[in-house]
Length: 425
Image 1 (cartoon, one colour):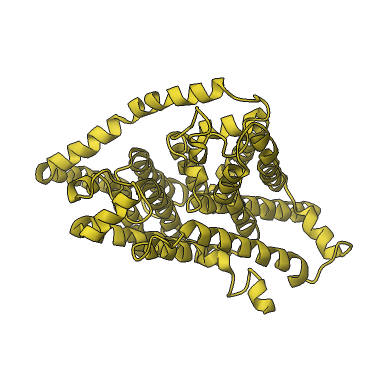
Image 2 (tube, helix red, strand yellow; image 1 turned 90 degrees about the vertical axis):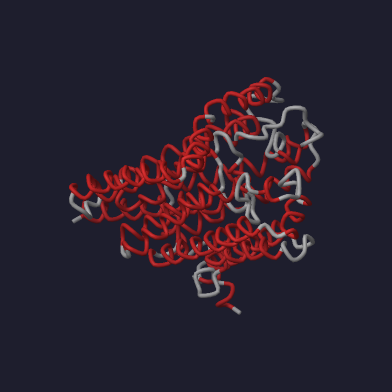
């Protein structure tokens, strides 16, 4: 029993979170009465329980124990900011309800967008080998749902078309409507985002151990990202390819630079070949990509309207007040634009905490890029995609994001401790 309650044991639920929640989504093909969101929330609460037991009983420490004092001295500015952001979102429920929102709106948003912040603590405390294990299980989960999505996309069985129609993911239950983008069982937004995040997790494998295997996983992620037909996902997927090449040739220096020139030539030749055999597909992707600036311009109207109608500029409207759960209650939803939504709901104070946390994460991550390459990339693509999508409110998206921030915090503390030891000699 004690082993089960220890999140660092083999029973640690954090490592299996993505596989278990994805399994819940897959089971919705059998019955729509299965609620993946409920499964995810219960898992998160159990992870909190395991973490609390590990911190107190698992380590055999008490408030007056020297071990606890030693742990508290390891707190850095990222820990403090992450804790403040969590507490601020928790307290925002007070003014969210005060400004006219039902408590269910705040509670639903808290469970999907803030409860996953436990993964910051996980990434902050687990060993290096456990970080690798978590990333590998994450990749497996994403590519399982991606593979299922491809099969359903190609075969287009009627039960699947009806399934998507009942979930309002397509407007007509026919193959042509469904094939506009690959939805799998999680929707195209999540499919695109998770595929790009899996690319960066795969890049860690490329850079640190298994180059050939990692490259296959990297390009699988690229394939799934483009199958999602999400503009932001396709753009950041291409950016990730450039980023990984920069890491391989200029930071890690795993290959001579002449290989880089050969790779560029091969990519150019491959692109020309694709234009010859599949020009219509290339043009379809091209038109999707070039329409991205226009999409941002269209969405900016809803952002401006929401900002102009904030209840309190400093405190914000409260978590969830301008999200999809508030549809029909508030006139100014931020349906597409996670960063604008964050500002409207968190106000100047909450947004400042979040922004400062991100700036410090990038500062530590970029300073130690060889140790934090994947994490810097995951944070960057999350924020970039959050410009036009509400990525930060999804229970499947936020855990990998906060895990990356936590890993960077752990590396920063570790390097600080090593520097202190060196200085004391």
